[in-house]
Length: 86
Image (cartoon, rainbow, N blue to C red; front, side):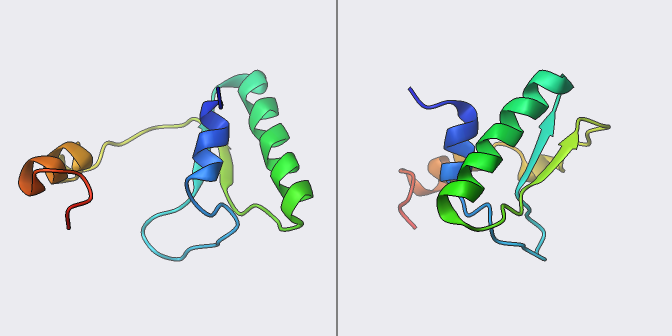
C-alpha cells in the first residue's frame, strides 16, 4: 500500500514552481518525518532527473482558511450531485 508521502507526490507536479495562490508544501514534525520526506524527494529527483520544488518546512503556526474554503470536496459534491460532474 502506498504511503501518504508517495500519494502526495504522485497526485500533483512537485517540480513545478507556482506563483499562484497554491503551492506544493510539506510541513513536518520532528527529524523522523523530515528524513522520510527527504528520502521521497531524493528518490523522485533521482528517478526523474528534475529538482523537486515542493517546500519542506517545520510545522509552525497554522491558520485555517475562511469557512467558505473549508470542506471543498463535500460542498462541490452536494452542489453537483457527483464528484467530477462539472
